[in-house]
Length: 135
Image 1: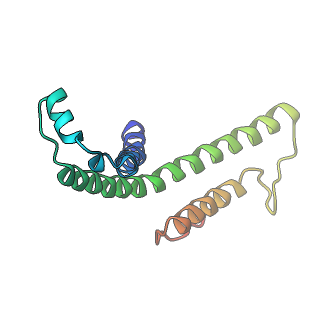
Image 2: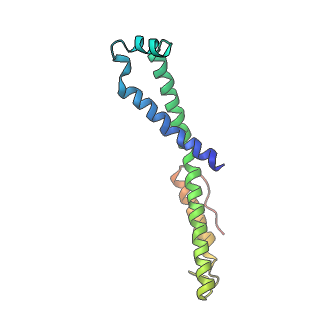
């Protein structure tokens, strides 16, 4: 899933840049450029058709990027939560910290609540209607 998500997330900026470069270059307004391209590369360019394809790809790239963002954000939250777990457990193990956490008798009982809150925040920021899980 990871490589697919990265590939989908990368497609958006690439297509956006391609379309922007074409617009900013204004190559179709350069006198004699169509004949020069035909002479040098062996085909007659169709700038209108090319512009249409670039605009369609730009729209698809924006859609792909918007689709991949929630997955990337959720992955970052899962990684941060896992790192937090390991830090807490390591500190408890090596420094003999007391076995009670915020508001409970178990030092790790607040972690599912924290994770659930992070998941809810991600769902809310991405527009998802995911319900908040309670431990």
